Length: 153
Image (cartoon, rainbow, N blue to C red; front, side, top):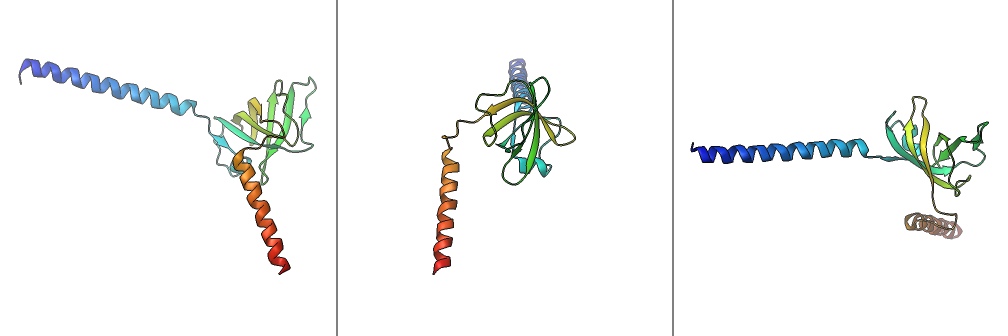
C-alpha cells in the first residue's frame, strides 16, 4: 500500500473512532438525564424504577396534606383516579399547590414506594384544562348522555 494512502486511511479511521466515541458519550449523558413521567397507577404496579430520578404526578387527594413541625416538611397523597402514591417534600410549595389540584413532582421512589420529591410543580389554576383532558371529559359526558338516551327507549 502506498504511504500516502496508508496515512489517509489512518486519518479516516481516527475520525470515525472519534465520532463514534462522541456519539457514545452523548447517548450515555442523555440516558442519565432523562426524567420519565410515571402515573400513580404505574408506580403502584412496580413499573417505576427505585432510587432513580423520575417525575410523578396526579391530583392531590383531599385531606391528605400533612405538614411537619417546622412547616417545611410536607407529606401528601397523589392519585390518578385508580391508585394513590404518597409524596414527601421538604421545602416551600408553589402558590398554586392545594388539595384537589394537579401537581408534578421530581424525585426518587424509595424502597417503601414513598416518593421523595426534590421539586414540586403545581399545574395551572383551576380554570385551565389541557385540550386533551377537556376532549376526554366531553367525550365521557356525551357517552353518558347516549347511555341515558338508550336506557329511556
